[in-house]
Image (cartoon, rainbow, N blue to C red; front, side, top):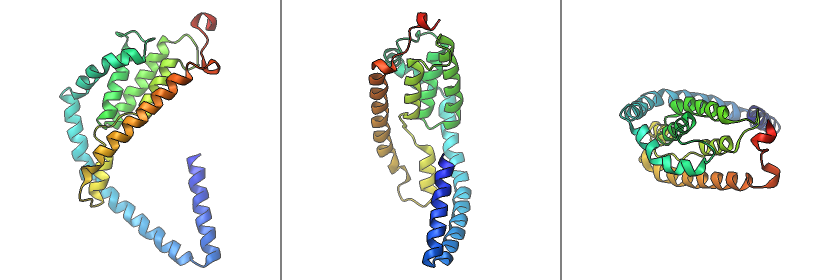
Length: 202
């Protein structure tokens, strides 16, 4: 779907340029944008390696496990259907902690593992449980403490204050997390979204 939107925007731009006699400007801007994108990618290599190295060290030092431990009481309330000692709880906690630290690669693998563990608790077949829907909402709107990728891009682009994005990002992700949790908890109570009981599903 996203590809269709982008293709549509490009075609509209080219056709508009054809009818307004600005094809030369479009061609020049295209070449310059391609050049800039390559320069940006090369500039990002060093910064990304540095940040990801720091984050990897934090992960190895046990920061992810520490964050997961802090979040455990909250997670028990958000996921009453998941036993506290079930592997799903550990996978979800690790995924959310990795997301907070901007460890995207680790978070993806942990998120997939969490979904598999949650599915093992379900007796509703291919229907997502409330716990799965809640985890997906939290994962999509996860709170980010250190937006490493954005900081690296700002640094590469010559920003005078590349870490200035940390505060707004933290505020925005807290709001998005709160909104997603409120929405999913309200929707799961509505009759049309209520799931069949496990006895009925069997």
